[in-house]
Image 1 (spheres, rainbow, N blue to C red):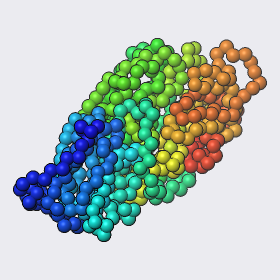
Image 2: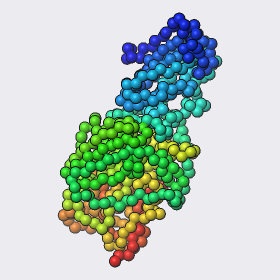
Image 3: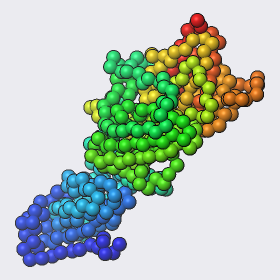
Image 4: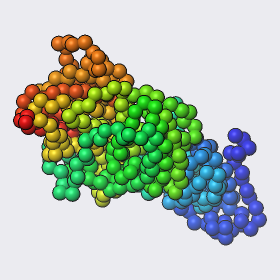
Length: 478
């Protein structure tokens, strides 16, 4: 640490006599009388931290930061004075010429979510002249707000696979930004296309090859509200995959987005080190797994901060059929998730990390859009057997899945029947709720007894009122 992060003070001939000749004469960080000294600080970006995280310099010294990214993903160092390292790939080094320093300076990594994870830097000014000069960025400076740099879809993001203990991220602070107003039950915009909840049968082949392209898309996520989503295949949720126990899936992940991403398939069991690594824009990897256990499994981006990547659209479902799964008349897949809307302003904001960390969703939704199946109902006929597969993608809210007016005679939760199923003895018992924690999944079956409109909700009623609500429209039987 001493070797890589030493503070090197250089006072040398012509530069000391004339810092302006070295491009250091202007004070971008507060007015101060130049001392003629040039201070060079070596800073490393490592493990979503800057090392050292702060440095002290005398008022009037000219400061140069030699920034090296020793991490395995992209970082930068942005200062509230306007100086910046620019984006640094793994292993890259650059010089940031801060200028003559006359006040405290705040810095951070502007990659989405990294500042909130604790990737901050501070220049502390000492000396008798510093007391009355500036005061640092302070709370009133727009550049010092907790969310600065986050929410820009052009930023690189992420670190590692995200399956470690993580970081405190205690640098973010500040109140969540105001969000667009959502009107419960509002009609979707004319360009909104409902996510098709119909689940196709498992294909006959046992080896499944698929290319998933990471794409940034501007999408209406609620009536009148557009968000820049990070997606697998252009939709949130991503495409549903289906197979049987013993099937092998070969997934090629291609990063066509603007930031680093990764993927984690819960349907496979394998060491995450290589297949779940973050890949930068323009890169690709192949992820192969064999489904050895049945269930409805989540897949998602595991790049840190994982909560932000999931909340911003990077999730989907893999359905692995239990052996001897009976045929039914209708099958639907509903993936519950949350929306954390960014501030008012031009389209292009991503999910608000401050709200995610505070667990304050603006909406809870099925298949990416609030109340969409109120306006485009799921369909069935009286007397038909309907199977509803449900996955809770979170990232934080549990689901209490319920069909108003219906009773479940079959419940399959996390790989096992808890009610009914092939060969189960006759029973008068029934179920009313499929309870799911984030990342859990299962299915329920019911036979609607008569025509009508059966609301499909999370019975955590505040979430139903936030948008986890739809309708199963049942017509009279043949």
